[in-house]
Length: 325
Image (cartoon, rainbow, N blue to C red; front, side, top):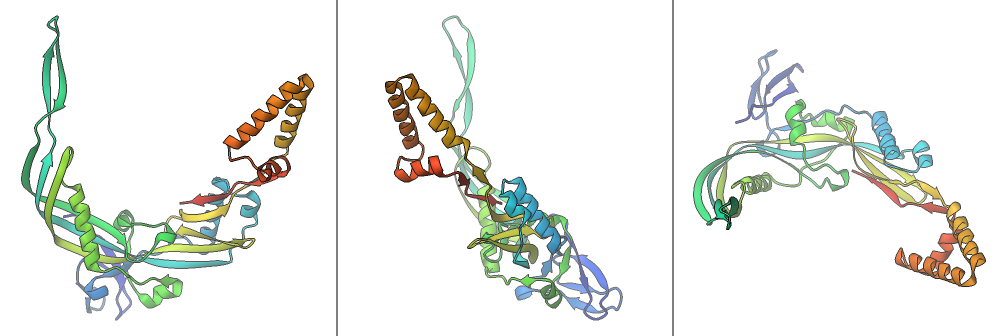
């Protein structure tokens, strides 16, 4: 089994901080001697990862990411966020082992020798007979999944983060003062099924054609961990944009920004100049040049009155949106 994560909580009796191993259900305060039972959802311990990025830093990270990705410079420079909220998103983290049996049917490779008419020997690898077998397995499990819908935040798992960052016991009143605490929606049984399915997919190794497994979790340590994410919003015209920034490292997880505009002055001028020059050479050359231009336009976006108007008179061209995350 992997080494247990040390977590820190404050004693509700004397407010002194003390540490204990994650997964323990009981802890003794070294300051006042109070014996505590640590539990969360249905007896599951619940922890929080504290934010390291404040509101100002989150906004600065969003501006920097938008500029680096090619956002509209005027929008980035004058960006005014209209709303920001620190969200604590719940994630399940399950650690332990999946033990049981695994049946596999796998492809084998054998070396085949061949000799040519001159007696030269060559060896090549060919497909061999299919082999099947059953073995007992013990697969390490470290699985993390969102406990609610986090799709708009762009965060899918925190297994690595929760392994290296310090966990603190969840104090709902204190954390709620800093931001919005999201409640879990998925159940522990669903997480267990997902973790076992992931363990089954890892079994067998290379060359497996078919496999079947019957696994059960053992040494399970399940915890509910709240992770901080900044949810920022700003508007541009009638459009509302949302940006999610990691509350620990300041990385932009998801978001959209208006893209930069392009001034297309030379494009229509160059087109007209080339067509006039073709007609000065010979009328036939001019008609051929016009036909070639129309054919190219039709092949690259379609030919219509609107497209011709945009090509010759659309001096300002907006290049869509920049999507981050």
